[in-house]
Image (tube, rainbow, N blue to C red; front, side, top):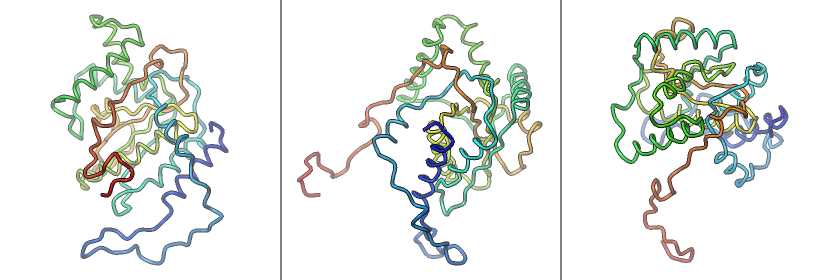
Amino acid sequence: MTSTAAARGGSRDLRAMSGGTAVCGGAAGAHAPAGDPDPIDPDDLIDPVEPSALAALIAGRRSVRAFRPEPLSRELLAELFSAAQHAPSWCNIQPWRVIVTSPALTAALGADVLAAYEAGERGPEIPFPPEYPEPYLAHRRACAGALYSAMGIARGDEDGRMDAWRRNYRFFGAPHAAIVSIDRRLGAYAMLDLGVWLGIVLTQAAAMGIATCPMASIAAYPGPVRRRLPIGEHQAIAVAIALGFADDAAPANRCQTRRAPLDANLTFAGISEDPDADW
């Protein structure tokens, strides 16, 4: 599924899954989109993705922290984000705004952000959590431990850890960065839409053989990002995504984080384990 043809097929999958037109909301005042929806041509629909293959793709993707220098084509980048453009959103508001940088601009932006980090110019436009209560703190520490272990950085090696952290601001050597912002006037619920869109970007990229790393660290230094890129005054910088091809020889890319068991996040209410039981 790494060829352009396979990627294009994946994009059709996403469009087919979200091709219906829904009425916005269900309460008084809800309205349908102006005009009649375009009819769906049956020839545009394809068979659904095999569920086990999709599950394997999602489980197997990882955040890549070392990239090869060769760039992605504009066609391939457009194909990736065209698929994600069909992500569902509340009342179809589609609040994500994305700027994708060239290799030269990625390098210049990375140098600027690193300088801002060194100068202590931190000031995220969307507040970071002030603390991580349990169990989130344990997950966060396990993630860092897995990464530093893969890189061969000992627990007490502060210089090694700081050098690894600084690589965030260079986009881990990726040739491209996607800077993602959202209209701050829309409030917290639009962040749900952004999260859905981001998940589709990461999954579609994995299907196309494109390596990614979503990065909140870049959003902590909006000053240099705004000086380099045309981001509107109502937009808040939410996240960056490093994009390129993975350097499979890099130790950092041997890191694979684990997930908690399902029952840590999911509760069945009134649903019996017995398939023959009445609800």
